[in-house]
Image (cartoon, rainbow, N blue to C red; front, top):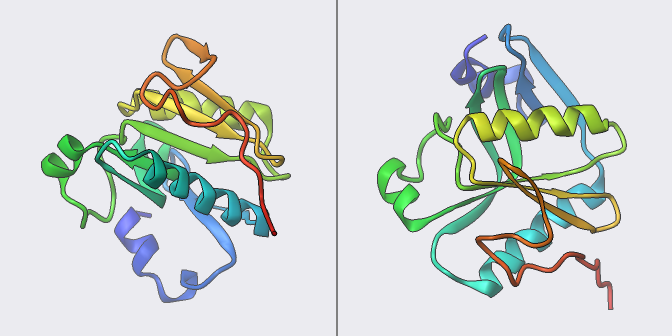
Length: 162
């Protein structure tokens, strides 16, 4: 199934699942937890707080060598936005930073594969937020102590309910 068919299909709208495709064009759905969306929002809030131009957004579909993968959060530089705009239904090149928020249904192997797929599509950094708000940062050479692009980004994000 082509990506435009997936997003236009009436029976796939409003499902409580993250929808992606695999390398054969088959639909893959993953259940989402409430904290998943909270961490997405907090990560975007941190990008806005740190500034530096560009734009962060949730649920960005990116074409990879193994189908369309939807980044939980993606950050695009001003240059990226000028080149591709903001109205694309599917990104054919990965934004500079791609972030995945782990869910209980994710395996370490799945996250490692997504990291490699996003780097193969052009990402400069891949960040991983675990279910407790701990952040890990990677570039194509391996794990980093901090992001090279946003060095002030925290290594832990708190869900503050106060």
